Image (cartoon, rainbow, N blue to C red; front, side, top):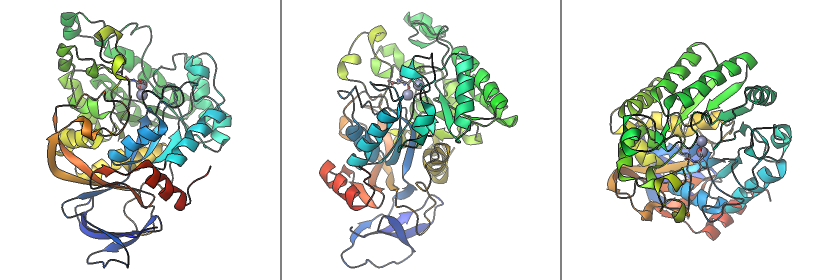
Length: 446
Ligand SMILES: NC(=O)N[C@@H](CC(=O)O)C(=O)O
Ligand SMILES: [Zn+2]
Ligand SMILES: [Zn+2]
């Protein structure tokens, strides 16, 4: 495998260093390192080095919805965004509710080689909310599933939720809840409030999210199990999680990049690119979510990358699908919302987009603090660049990004997964090259 010398990179703590990547790990770190014979040399002056980003909430769509995304195309999008690991949501067809399907998703991820793919198992059979899926078999399978979610749907039945928490507790797993009371949100189209009345769209009230979170943190306390809350979107949700944490409940929470930056005002255009679940909320919610991320109430940023084909978005608002792609834009949006506003330094970004999501998903050894010997999962970002976000930046199959046409700061220059590059100079490498490097790295389990 080619050795790489990266010179003059700025680490998240602000110090400048050279790095040598060899045999899949950070082999050397220090100032003034010389290039080993035959090494690739990258000048990283002005670039911030981050541990490879880890997304706890990605929709890869395979099996079943390959016209929107595949494991290969979705992990290409991940690499383009600086991600080296993604947790793949279970709302595929068939649903990832058996050991067979989760192993298939993991095998596809290994074959592609762009990122480590960790399948998420469904909590209930077929996401139907009626019977628990074979949680134990998925946990014991080759995919060693630790995160379980019916995302896209809420586990609404309290007894099932309790049983799921009891089950995952036995192997240190976690249930990731899509907090949405289905009765309070029937046919809902956008945030409920003055604007939904004005636009004539059915409202999705904040209480539909907050009431489920309140119930579930109490269930997690009762069971003594780990609970994770997907895509927090309201100020009230931040308050509930803050209360739960103060009480010592083992709950973690995520926020998406879009909920940190965008508000419901965009929906005045009736452009379905802004249609997402949970919906874009108000300014005061965005402020509370940023505050929650700063004070640690919210643990991580997760993309909820949700690819949809053009025909599902290029239609009347009421008929359009919910969801936005987010892997390729996540870092730029977090920079805009958190770094350029002075709320976050790069060490905070590394924490919420790499170290803590890896810890919640029990992805051991993947994220790091640049120690010699640690896995060379790395992203190099140019924070000084600024550009109009266009489809050139999208490396997945779907183009349903809310940021197209917006000016965003930052760009990912290089990504390394287990020591080999997946992105160099802003260009995603070819699938064949990446797959070959992955086999060489000895990670191929197929
Ligand atoms: N976020 C979305 O709007 N859509 C997601 C489902 C989900 O995350 O709830 C999808 O699968 O398309
Ligand atoms: Zn969801
Ligand atoms: Zn989702």
